[in-house]
Amino acid sequence: FWDGQNEHFTSQGIFLLTVIIGFISTNIIYIFSNLQMNYAQRFFYPSFVLIYISSSLSLGNLHWNKKGVLKAEKIVQYLAIVFIFFSLLTVNVNYETDLRWAREYSITMDETRIKLGNILNEYESYNLTFVSQDAGAVPYYSEWTHIDLFGLTDKTIAKNTITVFDYIEQKNPHLIILTSADGKTPYPAPENIPLISFIQENDFVQIAVLNSYPQDYIIYLDSHVEIFFELKADINKIQ
Image 1: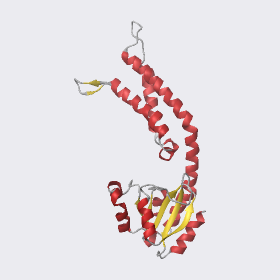
Image 2: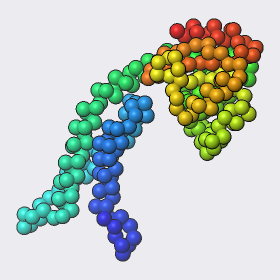
Image 3: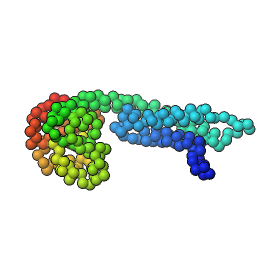
Image 4: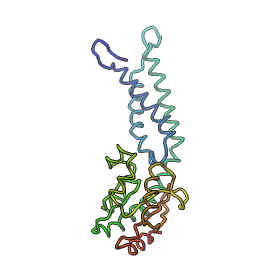
């Protein structure tokens, strides 16, 4: 596995690492990961490529020695092939569920998230700020100043989760989007708590609930915003 003399991985070691990574990815991480994180198999496809590469390497290198006894490395390759084809079987069993999830997600992407982003973009000149958990379509199409609650695009939140409430107060957002399972109450997730407190302590009004698979969007707007009624009316046109 490791060539101590030359201090590098052997070819068998590299091969084994490829197989192990692919096997763990497809049979453990892929199967037990949240569908939202893995929709359309975006996590799996790189692993899928590794599986096929390692399977072709295995089939291409298998051979019997002169005595008809399998060497240890060949036994490993046979076991690797078993792991590889088991991985392919596992993935195909779960494939239909992923495709169904991806279809619903893509539909609401067009009908909800992109539409919402385009509506907000009509008010981009007002230099408003909004907060949400999604760092994708809505911030992109709106071109508003965006506070990413997950911290994927915000270094302050990513590294200082304890001070999120103070940070939000400092940024003073005008619109807040929270996710919900029932369209009535926001998820009691840790990242939502600062926003819920901020909403309660300031003059925010719930203006809309948008159905957006796999969760709903509850939208709150600062009642003192100059374009409060126009923005509220436009957002509710999405329904």
